[in-house]
Image (tube, rainbow, N blue to C red; front, side, top):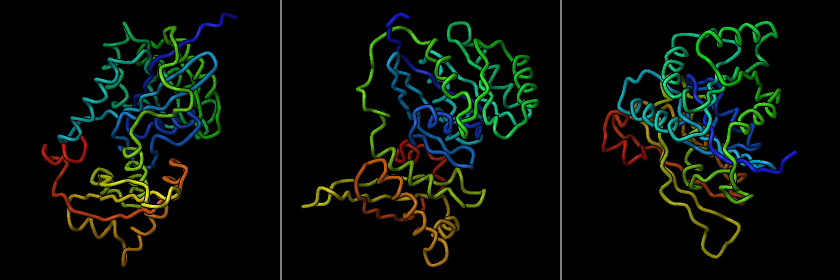
Length: 299
């Protein structure tokens, strides 16, 4: 046994909803990347940091790569590609319970371009939703798509092989010292994480037409005067059309109340303190297609 220490960056890529964020959370051991049953919920390259005695693995969670239909879509894809070029190892996630499709092949084609200088690990996710036979078939199907440095089946839900995957990724990192202090789990500014948690809560239970149309901006976040155990958070939830505002508010504001309650629980866990959360829904007309508004909403 040598006592060398490795440190570096990994990122997970895959179609929207391939289980990338859930896997990040399982590896880091805490909830930092937002997870939702709605595809396309990750917008920021949130980094999770896995601390081990022998290594520090920093995971960059990219948005799902897809064929873009809007300016926002294009910018998301640019984030993905620029992230790939900067990491030490890439994990390509494909769910065990879905056939390898054109979307996966499209991504594999893009990855093949970087595979010469950056190792790409094939990851079959969600094995808890498939039979051992299906998992085996998926591993074979993946091998036909491109040549991988390693292939690992995992389940973030029941923890199957999550440790093995961490070992495989760590082996691909260069030797080096810790890049972040021991206690850090992410280097995202807290306001970004808080906004993401609010957006995740707002997405839950919203009908399928809204996943792209919600953006959250934390306008203000500070300890209440004279109290060191309470943080006031003022945030705006932006939608694209007045009709969507009604959907997010719900009957007499009931849904927004629920969103606030759910988000507050997660924010309090993140910040380790009591939180007063003030939410307002606003309409920013067609923000996904408007460069000025995209900039203002942080894209």
